Length: 125
Image (cartoon, rainbow, N blue to C red; front, side, top):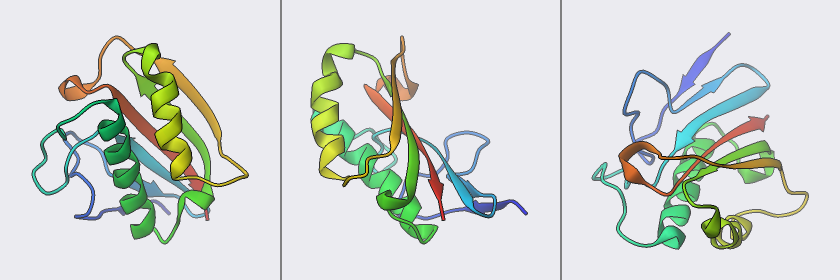
C-alpha cells in the first residue's frame, strides 16, 4: 500500500508530487530545496544557509513519517557548483551521526528557483 506523507512544517509540493511516499518499510522523500515552509520563498543567504534549510525541510518530513535521519539509508545531493561541496558537506554532517547513510552528490546545471542545492532521501522504518 502506498501512503502520501504531508506536513505543513516543510514546503508544499510545487508540482504534481508528494512530499514523501510511504511504501511499507521504506519512505521516499522528494527532493527538497531551500524554501521556507511558511513563505514558500527561497531562504536568503549563502550555500550554508540554503543547505541548513534543506536539511530542516527533510527532517520535518521524516518526523511526520515517524522517522529521523538515523533511518535514512540513502541521500542524493544535487548541487549547481562543485566548489560548494565542502561547505555543503560540513552542514550535512552536523545533522547526522555514524553510521552515515550511503550518498551520491552530483553537479547539475540548474535547480528549481535558481537554488544551489537540492536533496532527497530514502529511509527505512
